[in-house]
Image (cartoon, rainbow, N blue to C red; front, top):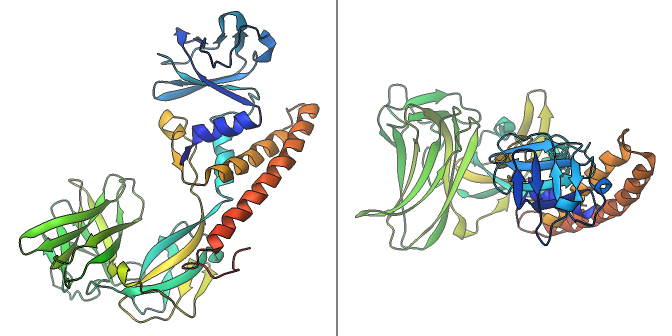
Length: 420
């Protein structure tokens, strides 16, 4: 299950006793919520002091509001607070018994710190050209040499002139490729001969002749565009009659450098496989480079030796002597991406693929450490949080060991005993 930031906050906060959640049954204007449901955390038999002075997070339409020092009225099962703009309907709410632990300022930081502690296997494609070394600046998530654990040759590139190095001056497109429109050349693309610049009226494709065998094909290409551009990679299975079925990957239009990857199971009666790259947004352009296509079903995978990654002043360098024309796959050990800190409803329901129990334990450790060390938390409460921290610290260590052991047992990627 992929947990959202809101679910992580509610699950962890509930287990350590500092967050209560519910859905209001009604509201009064923008300053009070009522919850008279059977499972309400607001009980008419309470004393007001139990929740008065707490913090309240309430989802107001597409935004989120947080108010501290709320007033609890048990008799009416209501909480009143300073106005939250746009509060309507029957909103979701969270009661924070430690209001200084801000759900929109502190919790996102603690959750991202917890995610940074957890590692995952990531496989990234790299076109091996025989250059001898590769600058890893394009892989912005590689921040240390220890993260690059393996490099494999996964088979020959079924595309010809994949690095666009055969592109004589004056030619309208790279050799062995077919262009639509007037495409541009991107000179000195990092690690490769050239890149191509395409807008929505242009395209570049190459056809691969297929044998009468059913196969699983993977394709990949790098794309870089403006914040509103969205390059696309299409793998098209064809016969003489034309396109039969396709696999498509489109870049997120956010201005980041991305590696698009698609897979396609190709039937025996397919005669041609067409790889095509293009821009999808009118008036915008994207740069593409290092396209590659390889046959996954052949099971071709062998480790490339020697394999050395060095950190230099200019970034990470990967040194690997290898024959030209092969597709490579880097096996990386990277942290899970953070969920960010934007205080919106959409950001609060962003998900992480980190294992549920593991991320809950990791976040609990971060939250309890925060509370045990915070100068405004009373000394008696600090001692209680410190005791709970020992318990959750043990849970986290146990769960992270099991997690890393599972990764270590993935023999196709890691050698036995490498990860402690």
